Length: 319
Image (cartoon, rainbow, N blue to C red; front, side, top):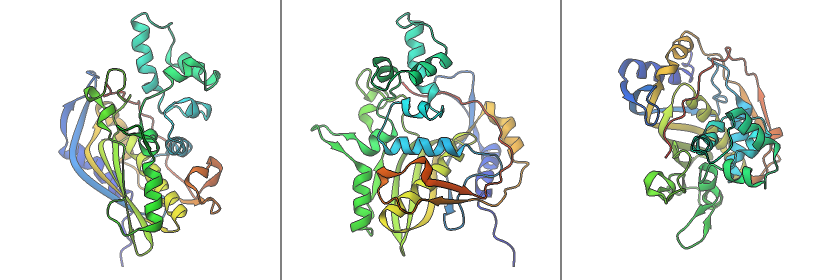
């Protein structure tokens, strides 16, 4: 009987699909880069078979976990990430400062100097509060959605309550897409630094197993998608533990899924590699509240990836 095909081939096949069938498109706000893009794809991972941390290149798990914990705090300031030496959102914070700097409104700082300043200053410092804040990004929408009548809605808190009490419901969905804070739909100065790429997710319970489906409107397949897979797979496992269920599947549905023109060589290098067995993720079983998780509660076992492949983050979009 043939061995089951490694689930990582879904990701590698997606890369091949884009290379073969993708349409070349310009990139908004970044004329030096293009993308090769397809629309409407889906991959899925059975979380009982292992933790889907890609093995054809080493993935920065510590950064993924800290970012997820940052989301769960409902935070929008990069100060927490910088204090943890995680720099995946640096460019998005620096971009508006750079714009103000060029207009002569702020002192000249390189991105490295800007980041170091936020890291060294206390959280309540006016510079940190103003320039480290990314606006109403993922965690804020998940945990602190602002309503027109002045209330604050904890969408994730509601979803967890529903999973504990009425897990059969088909409406347990959390959205990060809030038009009030996106592009020109937002009031001046209120737009998010980056309109949410992973826009909404839905929970489903079957036979005591919790699954999550993510809809991602825009996906940087080489750099971003490996992070997204690991982040939402781990998130599914954490929620399953909190609500007393077993992890089921992570289903990843894409809108525009693409490869940037400055990642083509790296993609070619990755496609020459063969997947290795997925690792296992152990989560501290004592944690039963979503707000209580810490970095020390996660242990990765048996991760033996191929070497990392570096690629430049392409800062695009925004408003």
